[in-house]
Amino acid sequence: KGTNQQFAIKILDSHKHKFSYQRVKRERDILANIDSPHLVKLYYAFWENDFFFLVLEYLPQGNLNSLIEEFRVRTNKSTSNLPESLVK
Image (cartoon, rainbow, N blue to C red):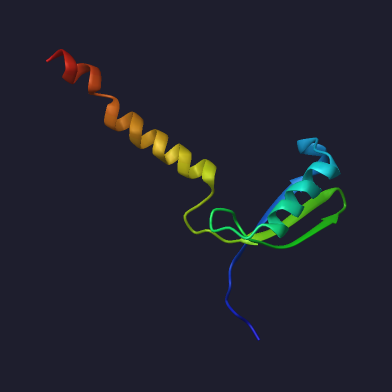
């Protein structure tokens, strides 16, 4: 029976990112063992052909990097006229 639940999949290529198995396993262990509203929920993880897959809770707002970038752009736009307004 389908649930229509959406998931995000984080795919890590061990050749491209040059990470160790232990580092990824540690990330998986932390996400699997911590239940916090501030961390994305891990549903499943597996390793296949030098790729590590994390099946995660889908967050429609985007990831932390995109939120930080959006905030940075908004802050830069709102402060871009600040020196001009101080001179007047």
